[in-house]
Image (cartoon, rainbow over all chains, first blue to last red; front, side):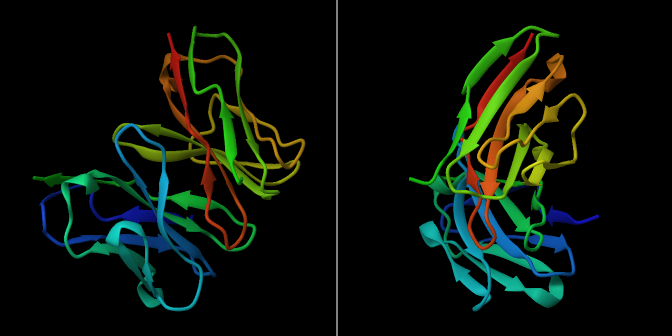
Length: 113
Length: 111
């Protein structure tokens, strides 16, 4: 079955530390890839997306992600986190045209001031 | 403006009383989906629909029904709600090569 996994359930960092959140998917066909963020008490917000082209994509708030097709991965990065980045982060995969849209289990990020 | 509209935003109901949460999108998307979000469990898919009259079970379909009689609407039906269905529910719609658009969420409490 197709699935999306995220490496960490909960990540705790100090401000200014670098962030990398892992995401892997199991599907052999063409995919579209997304990272969403959910701040406490709010609904999901798109951080960035990859459809095709340059595998390094830049999103909002200084986030970026790299698609590595051979590893079925789409890891999220930020060079220097801020306290305001405290949130839950979800990787999501659209499994081909007309196929399902699946979320990873989420990673909770806590940034300590 | 592209949007997904969910109603109601908040609902408190009693066990066994049928309820429907509506979801409507104005983007002519073929794909729509329902998720529930619970602490520590992330977003779990309940049902999804690839097109009108086409629906499929997600990871946690038990206790829920859906219908897709027209492209814009995808209601979630709880025929006999139980307390374990207390959760935050999100509806989403998606077109190929577009981002997913989410409703604002429905916080359901079943007592």
